[in-house]
Image 1: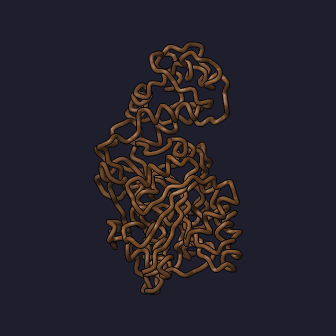
Image 2 (image 1 turned 90 degrees about the horizontal axis):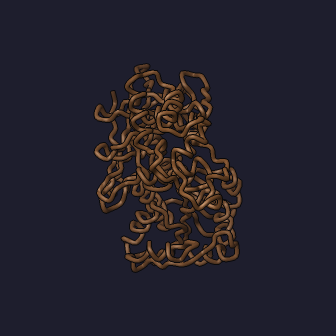
Length: 452
């Protein structure tokens, strides 16, 4: 088989599982491109057929030259740059793969991609990605048997393994905390019992409810952005309920809502939080006093003000939240805060100090699809599809693997001519998703299906 040349843009945590998969066959050469050459060199150091280069994707001429020199480009850089990469690929008639949702700017390039005869494959990670594959498998099976989907619920979470969920939020970060916290401000929109539900970002944590998957897991879920259009996207117009959401461990929403109520999601710059404002240490009790506007910076005064911000009236939940606030150290006169310019970023720095994965700790991926089905004969049943995976201490995290490996599989199938649908696409049709699903189990990625 002829060797293929692949350009991999980005060296984030999902890049290595993708790179490792593509280099396993021995028929691919991968160029890893980052703005900082050292980052690319670090990723490629143990892979002989991987070459590091420095590339600024905002330099259109350099990007076009790099894309043109390869058979396919994988874009694992921020989604805002994908349309730029696709334009370069259309110009040189080369394929592109991303793990991101199709943005309006990317969708606008569909006709041009088709005209160029190229595949711009997107949404092929975990969520979006694996979730599409296993949802559509069951939806199409039901339709082929003459039935219909009357309710569809899908919840996915990247969480610490139970033994490593040992902090008041029950959560840990394998990368920047900023994106996780900003997601707490997102609005949610979904269908519930035939009604369109719209949740304002400030109320998102209040909408969390228990999600029953395995009895061993106390998890809750809340809506993830706008999932209302999945009735059309998945061709399930009869679904009275259609919601896609995020999973967290029990207790997370109440604690997170308290931080929201305190004002910690404020990303406006404040001079006193800036590194240029002073060389003196900035103590956490001072930060929290300024945020809450209390007269005193004493721990007792701050804790009293924070307790008034807790929404839940459950005594045990309130006690746990106050314990968590003390654990964070944000009312302490002995803990120094990082000057990051905004309340959001100062909090992120603190969370990352306390809540990153340790060397021997595992993460976990939990994804459940739940379908209420009306069969052709009028009978009803419930079908579920559950993917549960754990990371490997010292190896790939579950999150990195479930994003990077599907991306690598889709890339290889395109290069091998087994996926041929051109344009700006996602794995929404059998000809695209079935070949990917056929390979996933051999990589340890699978779903357990049940009919109840």
